[in-house]
Length: 356
Image (cartoon, rainbow, N blue to C red; front, side, top):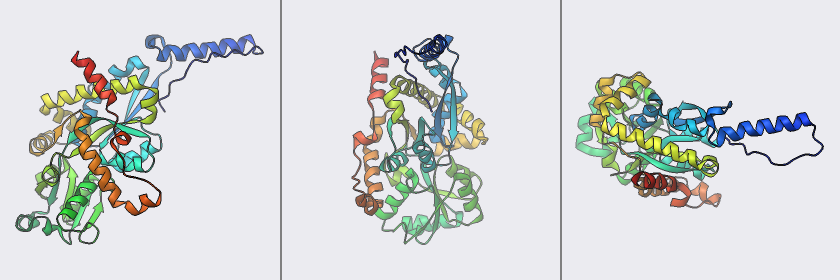
């Protein structure tokens, strides 16, 4: 857990000289570590950042690959930045609920679902919008072209677990097109690799997942992209950067620096998409050519401004509430508002300073 100790000032008259010296030594060491004298500090701390293997969150991997996390956070006494990978948003938020993450790159929907369950955290920066796609088996492509969403009736669709961006968008979109997600389709929870395998062997008929999985499936000849998420929910927010409540309250300067580094990484990937693709491919053991093709094909947009995700975030909060209405109402839980989900004050402070 990333915690900052405060120097104690109480004196115990009955303490022996040895105990007093020991206490003072520890206090000075900790004070030096977090008061700016990082060079002389002997202790180090670990900061834990969660992310997922998607090009949506390339900024997290890019900053790690270039050593920016460590370089930028060193002056705050952070000796190690631990990158923790998760297959999707819900398990990542379970880890954050358990206190195992300080920050998380994750879809906007999972933290909202987790906040309903008691997660102490806020969205502090944007990461990207849109960028997921429905891929159907090649033999179903013509049927989808003729019937649209109705072609998925009775079909098995692989996507992320309930509470994820993809599950939320897919459920909303199916309902809007006259299909009951539970009654008319067979939605199966799967990781990207498992979903790609499943559609390849025909155990699912379609996949709805974030880039680069749709392009990878298509490149392998196992599917055809028939719908990008931007057409299912125009300009919807996808991924965001979440900070734990403890970091927000106790270490605001660290939160600001995390955002600065995130902005730096985001601007770099926007200006150098081919380099970003190479870094992603290297860290994920993927084919660089396929990743570059994915970035060209996707309707994703990398961003860092959290204000751009508020509208969608509030809609997600409403959709998630409706999907769990009976349980939430039974617990006296109401629909979440903007202040309960977002804290854009750190981003605003950072960007205001940089503009000067």
